[in-house]
Figure 1 (spheres, rainbow, N blue to C red):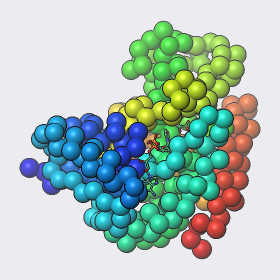
Figure 2 (cartoon, rainbow, N blue to C red):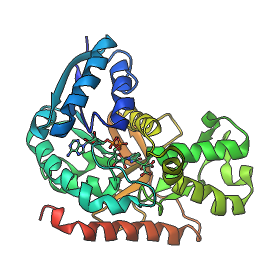
Figure 3 (tube, rainbow, N blue to C red):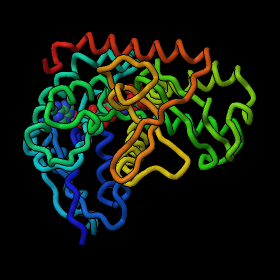
Length: 329
Ligand SMILES: NC(=O)C1=CN([C@@H]2O[C@H](COP(=O)(O)OP(=O)(O)OC[C@H]3O[C@@H](n4cnc5c(N)ncnc54)[C@H](O)[C@@H]3O)[C@@H](O)[C@H]2O)C=CC1
Ligand SMILES: O=C([O-])CC(=O)C(=O)O
């Protein structure tokens, strides 16, 4: 049997957690022959709910679920963890932007960054989901000086998957026919969903779609505002689709991206050659292989896309400014 992977999940009794944990335990994240140990973190008042989730996990009798840890102490949750999925944070409500959560949620990632630094396994890889995800990832990274920066990522895979769906619908093809979508920048309303380099059935997407007006005035705003639309419709923010995107993000990173395709991940900005200021977590196209990722560099932006990219980078600088007291000097 393979050695079990230790997966720390924060906010494990929350909505995303409830969609996520069962899929990890079922093998969707690391494959059908990879045992896992779930190390679940919650705040103290939610430990009882977490116990209930753990009871349900037991009742599934998952062959791959080797052990479980339930705790309200990040030092325990992150001990020897190979992966840390930082979901636990307040979600936004109707009428809020994700960055409105920054002063509530940012401090969580100071303590968790430190606890990761002190306790995690040498190969730790981190994905931040709690919003505002990019800036929270920056906070965690800066409080974990002994962990290589490139191990800290934020999730823009949900935006990426949303974009694939919109393009597939418009082109009248199946989602598997759409490749090389990109989400640039912040997981926020300023993100830049980009089909410039995308392929539909192997052909350039802009030519297949042949409708610039749709791209600029429907596709981009729909993807940018999809989180808000879900909150309006459901009364709660996306949970199952967010959990699914997190499965995709980790699976790609751990097991690789298919030949000829790429995915979007928010990673330390210095890894890209697109002129983005250093010191923010910026979503780029990446290819993954053997547990590592590389930014796809050297793509040209059309002129009308350049100011959009500048705007999302600027927003990340503003978010960083708003929490600069939480960054490790
Ligand atoms: N990056 C992305 O694409 C997406 C991000 N999100 C974000 O994910 C976060 C979680 O969303 P939901 O699960 O729907 O929220 P939720 O409120 O249902 O669950 C959050 C859980 O985190 C726990 N928690 C709070 N502080 C914690 C701490 N310091 N340590 C450990 N656990 C803590 C809470 O007790 C709660 O059980 C939100 O910030 C939401 O905005 C949601 C969807 C997509
Ligand atoms: O919109 C929200 O607040 C939740 C989220 O990040 C998303 O669904 O993309």
